Image (tube, rainbow, N blue to C red):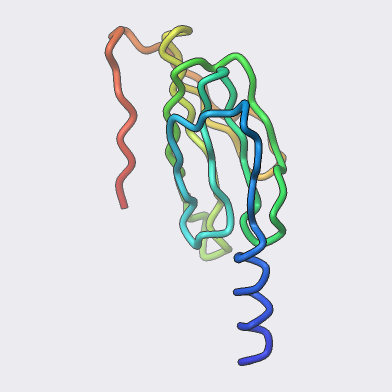
Length: 120
């Protein structure tokens, strides 16, 4: 177990995303710490696998995006993990199944200055 833990620490220590053109405007780490959603100034949201050290998903066209993670219990099975993305310029919030699922919900947001607030 100690050996596996050391490998995990080494993997996390190598997780570096070096892109001088990209400016992160927000980050939300998933429950459990394995994934992170990073919003940038170019209107994209990257979903990064923090253990593997790579980007696993990219959402484009979401300027000034705010992100939050949602875990949903389903009858005792492992909780489902979803990413909520608020896109103010579209006046819309969408919820995506992670890692690779599609959009499971979308709603219009009536307020121009709406904010997304995560809670545990």
